[in-house]
Image (tube, rainbow, N blue to C red; front, side, top):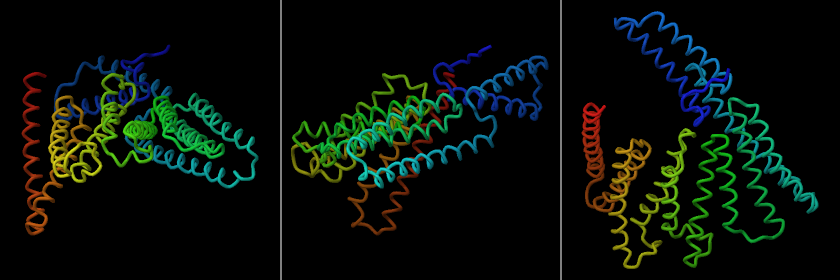
Length: 365
């Protein structure tokens, strides 16, 4: 009989692994409570719960190849690293094979080989995914399929003498995101987000009359991408994919705060009118406001990655201001003491915030 678990339809293997971890934590806490002298629950109830959990774990291991112990989790981490390195090596091998034999093939054969590599790698990824419960081989195949597709578009453009265009970033982003969600692979999600950010920034730059390859000269070109990435997890349910919502939010914050950090110190790349000094001051204020806002929002919504990113950039903005104000005016030891004192002050502020949040949780559990 097929079992259905709460949240499984939404999250698949990620939910199965979380359920297995919760069972392990539950058993560990029961053992600890017994060691601390608390009376044990009814023996019949314990046997029923343990039997139910054992059946769940067996079924989850069969269907999703989950990690049932700490040793298995450590081994899985090694397997993820090996699968990533294997994918990189495989993609490099494909690239150098093309480089070695490309000039020996006629044009028609080159087109057939390129299309065959892309289509074949995608079919291979799909076939492996149907048989690979662990997902490691599927993720390796997905990375190779993406590399073949990027190589396909690039070499076809060279073959038919097509001018380089930012439009190539769009199909790359589309395939990377499709494979990322199909294989639950965050590395390809990052690749797709990077391609999408480059495309949006290049389009924004061309609207202002720039050549698309110069989009990086105007950091503000990334602001539309930042807005889009921050909105994606708000309007598209990401609960089915562990860590994907956090990745979108971090990408949005990077596309927002990194340009602000650059423009707060080098205003020559800004679209804003006015003197460089006044533009830098605007972005300095905006940097503190945006990073502090990220910290507040992250704490309020329970987004740890947003809090950490906001804290990092708040400290970077603070450091650059200290450097401009005092690096040449005070001894170096005093400069770093000021930074250390500021860090300690921030720790006290966050400690008070934690205590306030803990108190609120006790009042409203």
